[in-house]
Length: 316
Image (cartoon, rainbow, N blue to C red; front, side, top):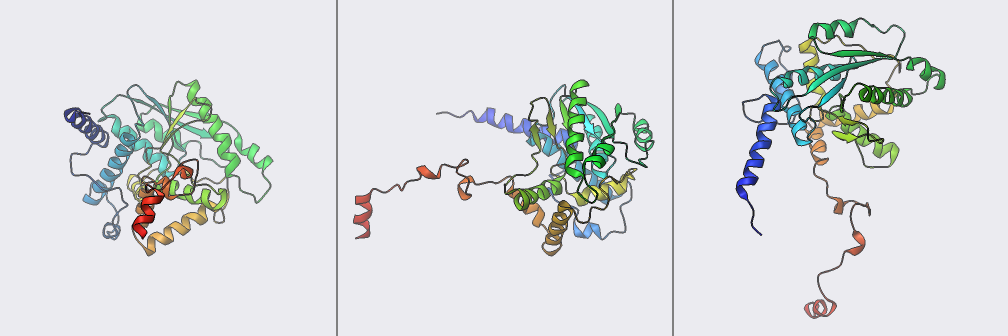
């Protein structure tokens, strides 16, 4: 069987160009890791400084690589960018708008915020910010707050019901407005936290995929920040001075399971820097034959290569 090495090389070159164009980076490859400790010791990041430029370049490169690795964005896509008012979704919109100018394909963005009618929610913040950006946007108003408060007893976690209601509204809105992709702002740390939540409380080995199709098949969800560390995104939010809107629906989240997992992972990272990088790399280096799921690997058909007679003769 002959292999067309020229075609293979052209395909590889195309992938590299695709990644580089999305990341808008002409310099050497930047590792998928958080801000170095040495950089973190600098007296703050100043716009235009070397450290600030390095941070933004790293985040853009990580987003570009995730987009390329999982074919998140294709020509003609209309992407609904879900904007909560938190640091991650602000960063995602900022980076996607920047990448539009250098991407190898044309795509459009629609920023969408779901106003859940929480008491005291600053309704003016997002419209004012989005108007300044000049991006196409919609504010969807749905009173999910009252539904959640009515159905969830006081003191219980509201996140599950809230997220299901929010997901259903946004999925429908995307279809109604011609968006074939939905971009969510989950990052690397979110993915790892979900992995451990599912192991500890769901008895299954699963996390958040960078790209997925909804159960009803109507929507494709992408997570462009999948390779980005939360530490980087926090610094980026400070650098950009995003108008952060806190989520008060859940009240104090100190005792929530996800917060406990986050604290555990951050404790590990402090004790052994680089551990989160290794754990995330493990999600991309899976060996089903070394696990215990008979649906993923055919353990029943495993047989020795030796015949009984030959093996006996060699032992003697």
